Image (cartoon, rainbow, N blue to C red; front, side):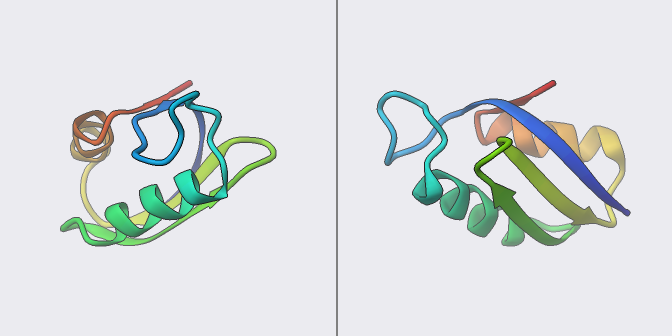
Length: 73
């Protein structure tokens, strides 16, 4: 399944202001791609979105994102 999510907050090592810069998106997408059940992930800056292709259940995906410090609408 492929879904696009609006990101409201991301815990990022690059952005102390949490403004979701390109480095933020790249870091989150790379980390997501390494998780079991995630086929691919990419981030957009405007609007602040994550497009995720996954094979895991939706609840598991939300747990993964929550554990990474990513909050979505």
